[in-house]
Length: 375
Ligand SMILES: *Cc1c(COP(=O)(O)O)cnc(C)c1O
Image (tube, rainbow, N blue to C red; front, side, top):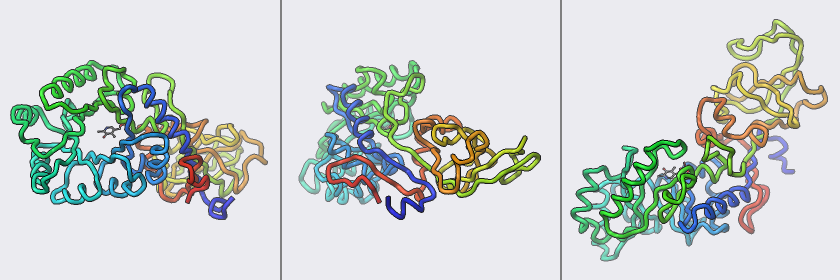
């Protein structure tokens, strides 16, 4: 055990093999469609630098990020993979995309014009994906722009369309909007020059083969968030967060615990203070909500979450079970990411992408050559 691990206030353990296994499950479910991986926001907070090589080793060849700079950071780690940047083509960045072989996802006609002009200037065909909006009203060609492109496909001169792409608004819910978006997307693709098509995110994969088209784009499911919130999670959990007990104290009625004195102690008991707080992404909305686990036994969170600390009631545990230095499970098999999210009134995506920089990170498994004990 490294010194850094031994003194760490909280330890975030990320299982790269479990992430790779999740990718293989999604690949098998989506086949014969191809399966990409979405690594935006540092692989949903879990560390794109470690996740990308692990997924490449598992066989993934297509990666999506949100920003050009995220794509540039990935390029040397997965030199032979295709990397697409969802956030479009920032003005003047064309040369950077070409140099690093990053494929832009073009979101409006202006970007199509700029990319085509740049390609014709170089006298080469340049690859791009084109995003067609089918109901999000967020990114992509709206109905007017789609009609213009379908009527004047020569606007794509110089562009090798790698993918027509659209995004589902309600993929994790049974709603007619999914079918409507799929039908809209089918019609859009049929009106455009032939190229592969991609509609499904993680939850979209579980809507069935009609939603798979040629390529699926899972993100959250790779990282253990349940893509089918109304049934049992079909994915592996991939991470756990353990926080260290800093102090244990005896309390008795009518003492209170923490800022705002929101928790009044009802009888005699013990409170343990653990080294995780809202500065680490343990959201303040979790004040007084849910439990951490000590050897599988729940210890309810009491009082407010503060910047660096959380207080938990360990009265139900034997005294010797909790002492300064004990690691308690904050997120893990007893309290999965989706449970924490429910308790905080948010979604697993936000819990993951909020994971803070102060955690000592340990990576297990992963690509051959990767170290079991990460940074
Ligand atoms: C984030 C994102 C995805 C992945 O979504 P998940 O719900 O995490 O699987 C796919 N496509 C686009 C366009 C996205 O922005």
